[in-house]
Image (cartoon, rainbow, N blue to C red; front, side, top):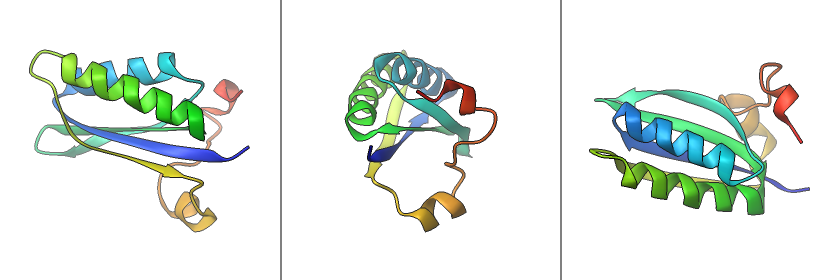
Amino acid sequence: MPEAVGVIQTLGFPAVLAAADAMVKGGRVILVYYGLAERAEFIVVIRGPVSEVNQAMAAGILAANDTFGGEVISHYTVPNPPENLVDVLPIKHTSKVERFRV
């Protein structure tokens, strides 16, 4: 089944927390990375089937924008990421997230 990677960058921690929560509840996806981008901006990365990532991304963007003081700075979905992208960026399915894979 083709997989996708979805990334949301937000202003402020509450917005990224709301986005991450909505994404894992909004689709059959796995949160594979979370981090501080810069200047109080945070990113969250999910992986899963393309249709599920699209659905989860929509839920995450809506939740982040609905958070008081929150703002989505940018977002992007990569359908069918090439192997070299998966190897270089921190988006692999690690042993920490393996138990959540469907």
